[in-house]
Length: 286
Image 1: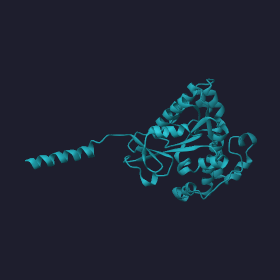
Image 2 (image 1 turned 90 degrees about the horizontal axis):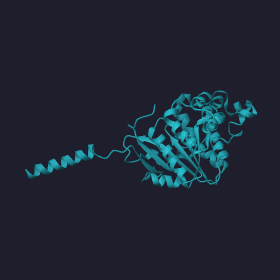
Image 3 (image 1 turned 90 degrees about the vertical axis):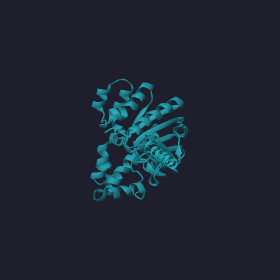
Image 4 (image 1 turned 45 degrees about the horizontal axis):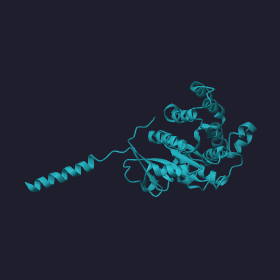
């Protein structure tokens, strides 16, 4: 009877371990795969000149943490915000919204807002508006990136007028096709991958880097929101930032999803200075 009781207790404990463990929506890891606190991430971000926050566009945890980090950085010092999700030729409309000249309807009419703007980006844009924080649209107009992809590479941009060239990184840009993240695009896209497609990615990265540095002010932290691929493994945007100014303090964050968030998978180690590992079952925003 005694041994049966012991077996029952052991079995019960195993069940609790398997099915009753604490539930967490996400964990944060450093680049080596060591679990760290949000406070450590924030302390490094506060000391950085530029923070690239790589997101999965439909990941609700990433969007929430972007907003929380913005609030904390604003309390701690001077903050500038910027995002891939606004293109450079929409800056006036964005400024008018931030300044109260137009309302949301006006912004929606004048700017090319992403379909998930209301759920994922409006909260942080409205936070900037309510607190007088600059918000910079850093991305190349998508029609120009499409020209690079479909019309023969960077040479297609030579036909742009002076005003249009003001919405992209100064030409010519330095392009390294051997960067692993650029080479991976060809692998991922299979028969649809072309050198011109990679160049379209590069002109986006170069343009975002250019507008980040053009709008960065000493003593401020520039928090930039972008798709994770644009800054993963310290490449993409960060490569172009370092080309132009290697003296600033840069920090990268990325977002990944795993079935088990208790241990960071090897393929994600080194992806960024801080890796936000989100439970794969977390609700998506679209």
